[in-house]
Image (cartoon, rainbow, N blue to C red; front, top):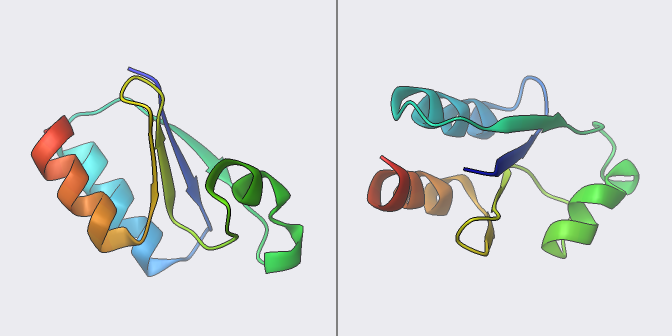
Length: 79
């Protein structure tokens, strides 16, 4: 499974997603992003925006942002 989580250290929304992925026993890679929105070019490239968290699921062709959406996706699709 090829999952990538773009996250910011200390972000409570990113932490919720991390906890959900860990609890679901899903393997994923974390890409830590810069605190400054203007420095998040990789996040913008993959998701079209600079906010985090962003989850990229290459196996399902899904890229999503907004922690609540990601948490629902983890519960419904990955858990």
